[in-house]
Image (cartoon, rainbow, N blue to C red; front, side):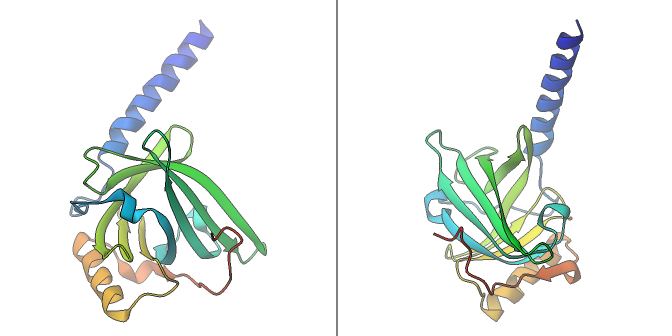
Length: 182
Protein backbone atom coordinates (compact mmCIF):
# COMPACT_ATOMS: atom_id res chain seq x y z
CA UNK A 1 0.00 0.00 0.00
CA UNK A 2 2.83 2.39 0.88
CA UNK A 3 4.57 1.77 -2.48
CA UNK A 4 1.31 2.46 -4.32
CA UNK A 5 0.88 5.78 -2.46
CA UNK A 6 4.45 6.79 -3.30
CA UNK A 7 3.96 5.80 -6.95
CA UNK A 8 0.71 7.78 -7.11
CA UNK A 9 2.44 10.83 -5.62
CA UNK A 10 5.34 10.57 -8.09
CA UNK A 11 3.00 10.23 -11.07
CA UNK A 12 0.87 13.15 -9.83
CA UNK A 13 3.96 15.30 -9.33
CA UNK A 14 5.24 14.38 -12.79
CA UNK A 15 1.92 15.32 -14.39
CA UNK A 16 1.76 18.60 -12.45
CA UNK A 17 5.33 19.39 -13.47
CA UNK A 18 4.41 18.69 -17.10
CA UNK A 19 1.44 21.07 -16.94
CA UNK A 20 3.46 23.79 -15.24
CA UNK A 21 6.38 23.44 -17.66
CA UNK A 22 4.06 23.86 -20.64
CA UNK A 23 3.45 27.47 -19.65
CA UNK A 24 7.03 28.13 -18.61
CA UNK A 25 7.60 31.57 -20.08
CA UNK A 26 7.38 35.15 -18.85
CA UNK A 27 4.04 36.73 -19.73
CA UNK A 28 5.38 39.28 -22.24
CA UNK A 29 7.82 36.87 -23.91
CA UNK A 30 7.11 35.45 -27.37
CA UNK A 31 9.18 32.55 -28.68
CA UNK A 32 10.66 32.79 -32.14
CA UNK A 33 8.42 31.33 -34.85
CA UNK A 34 9.64 29.66 -38.04
CA UNK A 35 12.34 28.14 -35.84
CA UNK A 36 14.68 25.63 -37.52
CA UNK A 37 16.06 23.32 -34.88
CA UNK A 38 18.77 21.91 -37.17
CA UNK A 39 20.21 25.40 -37.60
CA UNK A 40 20.16 25.91 -33.81
CA UNK A 41 22.09 22.72 -33.04
CA UNK A 42 25.79 22.97 -32.21
CA UNK A 43 27.83 25.03 -29.76
CA UNK A 44 26.65 28.26 -28.12
CA UNK A 45 28.82 30.35 -25.78
CA UNK A 46 27.20 32.08 -22.86
CA UNK A 47 27.81 35.81 -23.12
CA UNK A 48 25.60 36.88 -20.22
CA UNK A 49 23.12 35.34 -17.79
CA UNK A 50 21.25 35.88 -14.60
CA UNK A 51 23.14 34.10 -11.85
CA UNK A 52 21.45 31.14 -10.26
CA UNK A 53 22.64 28.21 -8.20
CA UNK A 54 23.33 25.73 -11.02
CA UNK A 55 25.74 28.09 -12.78
CA UNK A 56 27.12 29.83 -9.72
CA UNK A 57 30.83 30.66 -10.07
CA UNK A 58 31.01 29.45 -13.70
CA UNK A 59 32.96 31.22 -16.40
CA UNK A 60 33.57 29.95 -19.91
CA UNK A 61 30.07 28.50 -19.90
CA UNK A 62 28.71 26.98 -23.05
CA UNK A 63 25.90 24.77 -24.27
CA UNK A 64 26.08 22.13 -26.96
CA UNK A 65 22.93 20.88 -28.64
CA UNK A 66 22.53 17.78 -30.81
CA UNK A 67 19.57 15.74 -31.97
CA UNK A 68 18.68 12.50 -30.21
CA UNK A 69 17.23 9.60 -32.26
CA UNK A 70 13.79 10.18 -30.69
CA UNK A 71 13.68 13.82 -31.89
CA UNK A 72 14.49 15.34 -28.51
CA UNK A 73 17.60 17.47 -28.13
CA UNK A 74 20.67 16.38 -26.21
CA UNK A 75 21.98 19.27 -24.11
CA UNK A 76 25.50 19.40 -22.68
CA UNK A 77 26.15 22.44 -20.50
CA UNK A 78 29.66 23.04 -19.27
CA UNK A 79 31.79 25.70 -17.68
CA UNK A 80 34.81 26.43 -15.55
CA UNK A 81 34.20 26.84 -11.82
CA UNK A 82 36.74 29.52 -10.97
CA UNK A 83 36.40 28.96 -7.21
CA UNK A 84 37.00 25.20 -7.40
CA UNK A 85 39.45 25.50 -10.32
CA UNK A 86 37.80 22.75 -12.32
CA UNK A 87 35.67 22.15 -15.39
CA UNK A 88 32.11 20.94 -14.86
CA UNK A 89 29.63 19.43 -17.27
CA UNK A 90 26.03 18.28 -17.05
CA UNK A 91 23.85 16.46 -19.59
CA UNK A 92 20.20 17.15 -20.18
CA UNK A 93 17.34 16.79 -22.61
CA UNK A 94 15.19 19.42 -24.28
CA UNK A 95 11.80 18.84 -25.88
CA UNK A 96 9.46 21.09 -27.78
CA UNK A 97 6.41 22.09 -25.78
CA UNK A 98 4.31 22.12 -28.93
CA UNK A 99 4.90 23.01 -32.58
CA UNK A 100 8.51 22.27 -33.59
CA UNK A 101 8.59 25.49 -35.61
CA UNK A 102 8.17 27.56 -32.45
CA UNK A 103 11.22 27.97 -30.18
CA UNK A 104 9.33 27.14 -26.97
CA UNK A 105 11.02 24.19 -25.32
CA UNK A 106 11.38 22.59 -21.95
CA UNK A 107 14.70 21.31 -20.68
CA UNK A 108 15.62 18.87 -17.94
CA UNK A 109 18.89 18.05 -16.24
CA UNK A 110 17.28 16.25 -13.31
CA UNK A 111 14.99 13.44 -14.39
CA UNK A 112 11.33 14.37 -14.70
CA UNK A 113 11.84 18.03 -13.71
CA UNK A 114 11.57 20.40 -16.68
CA UNK A 115 11.89 24.16 -16.96
CA UNK A 116 11.15 26.56 -19.79
CA UNK A 117 13.74 27.34 -22.46
CA UNK A 118 12.38 29.94 -24.86
CA UNK A 119 14.36 31.51 -27.68
CA UNK A 120 12.79 35.00 -27.81
CA UNK A 121 15.27 36.65 -30.20
CA UNK A 122 17.52 35.10 -32.79
CA UNK A 123 19.94 36.81 -35.16
CA UNK A 124 20.85 34.64 -38.13
CA UNK A 125 21.31 31.60 -35.85
CA UNK A 126 24.52 33.25 -34.60
CA UNK A 127 23.16 35.09 -31.54
CA UNK A 128 20.23 34.18 -29.29
CA UNK A 129 18.30 35.66 -26.39
CA UNK A 130 16.81 32.91 -24.24
CA UNK A 131 14.11 33.44 -21.62
CA UNK A 132 13.60 30.89 -18.88
CA UNK A 133 10.43 29.92 -17.10
CA UNK A 134 10.08 33.31 -15.42
CA UNK A 135 11.88 36.62 -14.98
CA UNK A 136 14.62 34.96 -12.89
CA UNK A 137 16.22 33.21 -15.87
CA UNK A 138 17.81 34.87 -18.90
CA UNK A 139 20.72 34.09 -21.22
CA UNK A 140 22.48 35.83 -24.07
CA UNK A 141 24.22 33.28 -26.30
CA UNK A 142 26.60 33.50 -29.25
CA UNK A 143 28.24 31.08 -31.64
CA UNK A 144 31.46 32.96 -30.90
CA UNK A 145 32.94 34.00 -27.57
CA UNK A 146 31.90 37.61 -28.21
CA UNK A 147 28.84 39.46 -29.47
CA UNK A 148 28.62 42.66 -31.52
CA UNK A 149 27.64 45.68 -29.43
CA UNK A 150 24.55 46.50 -31.53
CA UNK A 151 23.13 42.98 -31.10
CA UNK A 152 23.96 43.02 -27.40
CA UNK A 153 22.05 46.31 -27.01
CA UNK A 154 19.09 45.00 -29.05
CA UNK A 155 18.89 41.92 -26.83
CA UNK A 156 19.11 44.02 -23.66
CA UNK A 157 16.27 46.24 -24.93
CA UNK A 158 14.17 43.20 -25.84
CA UNK A 159 14.76 41.68 -22.39
CA UNK A 160 13.72 44.95 -20.72
CA UNK A 161 10.51 45.05 -22.82
CA UNK A 162 9.69 41.56 -21.55
CA UNK A 163 10.20 42.78 -17.98
CA UNK A 164 13.72 41.63 -17.10
CA UNK A 165 15.91 43.74 -14.83
CA UNK A 166 18.98 43.62 -17.05
CA UNK A 167 21.15 45.27 -14.39
CA UNK A 168 21.30 41.74 -12.90
CA UNK A 169 23.06 40.29 -15.93
CA UNK A 170 26.42 38.68 -15.26
CA UNK A 171 28.83 39.04 -18.18
CA UNK A 172 30.54 35.70 -18.54
CA UNK A 173 34.30 35.49 -19.11
CA UNK A 174 35.20 33.46 -22.18
CA UNK A 175 38.96 33.26 -21.78
CA UNK A 176 39.73 29.52 -21.59
CA UNK A 177 39.57 26.63 -24.05
CA UNK A 178 37.01 24.13 -22.80
CA UNK A 179 37.88 20.45 -22.79
CA UNK A 180 34.24 19.90 -23.83
CA UNK A 181 34.45 22.14 -26.92
CA UNK A 182 34.28 20.05 -30.06
